[in-house]
Image 1 (tube, one colour):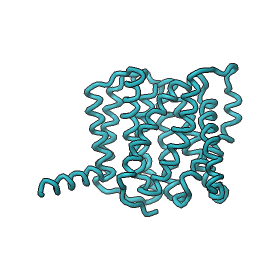
Image 2: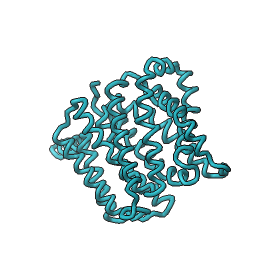
Image 3: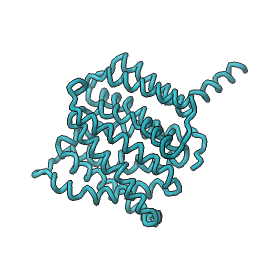
Image 4: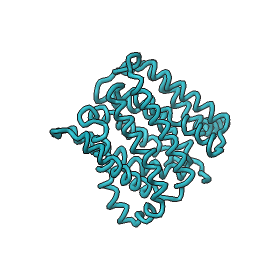
Length: 304
């Protein structure tokens, strides 16, 4: 797949995705202890499916699902079924902020897998940008004072990292085999297969008494906005600018997760955290080429 140069629209979508997925970790933290990982994720994918399936049929994209069902079945394991459950399990022990920081390792696993199995080249600037972004994420991890770090269960951290590996694999599979399939068909097909696979586990873990009230807002926000709407945008972005650039949104997710946590849960954001966030943003700028274009633009203005 030959990706095009990112346009302003692509950068705006990148930021919007980061904001949405940053909020998803807050919803996970609120909902997972109430429902359990399996039942919560079944509700997440099923609610997203109920919204997208009629739209997919109305736009006559369901034929793409039928034609590519084998690839979509494998993809659904890597991009939804397994990582969703792993991250929901992780947030039971390590909190949303730290889980989002673990999730920020996705670009590195994506690049490593792309280089190893798909012979995808990376420029020196992009590699340096990824390392800088990773360093910023490490600083965020060290500065995080939420419910974890030193006492965090090893299994929960391993689950979060394994989820990141699976996301990296899913992104490469999409770029290599499904780049001609619409984002709507990919997302709907993934939701469909995930819903079916998770159903027996969700039934086994279903709460004896279902809760009522605002907790369902978190569940449906996870399914409709953070899964259905966001993944459609994400797969469209991969088809436009390629997997390595599209996946850099995960560097920004911890920034938004910290912001939402501070805004709605009064979680502390320190000066050290802000410094780490600036490093992350600089890393994203180097990886995507945005920083270089900005410097060229500023230089041209100064010469005039």
